[in-house]
Amino acid sequence: MSYRPKTRLGILGGGQLGRMLIRETITLDVDVHVLEPDPDAPCRHICHRFTQGSFNDFDAVMAFGQQVDILTIEIEHVNVYALEKLEAQGKKVFPQPSVIRLIQDKGAQKEFYRKHGIPTPDYRLLEAGRISEHTDFLPAFQKLRKGGYDGKGVQSLRSVDDLAKAFAEPSMLEKAVDLDKELSVIVSRNERGEVATFPVVELEFNPKANLVEFLFSPANVSAEVEATSQRIARDVADRLGIVGLLAVELFLDRKGNVLVNEIAPRPHNSGHQTIEGNATSQFMQHLRAILGLAPGDTSILHPSVMVNLLGEEGFIGEALYEGLEEVLSWKGVNVHLYGKRFTKPFRKMGHVTIISETLAEAKFIAKKVQETLKVKSV
Image (cartoon, rainbow, N blue to C red):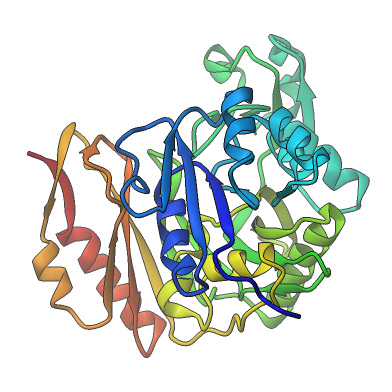
């Protein structure tokens, strides 16, 4: 098979995921075009062509799609109608519009799992304003069917007393799991159906922002849980027929059951440590998949911990990084700033990956990084 350089790759979205993907496109000599509404987006000055426009606008996506050879996304909330039309015209769109449409609706996701026998927590689909009819299902998590992102659109309902804060829009009620750990598997699949999975990682969440705070690679799980998690991830990718990267977020309950929480059809926060920690990064793996190339080696090179760099509470404005020089002097510390000019509480401003000979040592340094490196405002 021959490879043609200078492929024009279009990315819908110009945030940090696109920024890290562009870094890898240089290696394969790919030209990158970006469609993004924010004129100060992280991708603005590092792509070959930047188009300011909404990836939710049908006409903007259609016009953008005519300028590129392959379309991909860094966010799910895009105009899928335009992508379907582009695909029908013969344009390569990866992940496919049918996959994006499914994943835009958390309720449809759950129905997909049930149809294909993929293990997932019990759930109920709720019409608007009908939450009071399902008090027997509590405690549970209510998730908006559409529009939720980065912890938004999700809330815990423990008892009838919590119903006052319930979402009024169509939603999905997911039974609370007796949780042991939250895990994730990144899986890739190309047009030939070649699938590769990264080793399982373990996630710790910030309880206030419902965002990943720490990621541990490898996960502290049994060989059986590792194998089961990777098998489930492969099964989901194959059932979807996805071309590209898929993040499969998982629950491990206290009985040892592995359950699918949610999926994301793109590079994901739970794969950032692969840049330094694995033989192939998740971003290169995504590129390989959508360009029709064989998957890369997913082996872990070093135990690693990723720390999300979030905007500090009480600070809004132009970003200022305190402690950066100090943490950069520590062995194994790799800082990635996302190029966002302005900070606000809990905004993802960057991440830090710590690699070490042992996971215990990486965890120790990661705690020091979190205590030292702060995102404040000028």
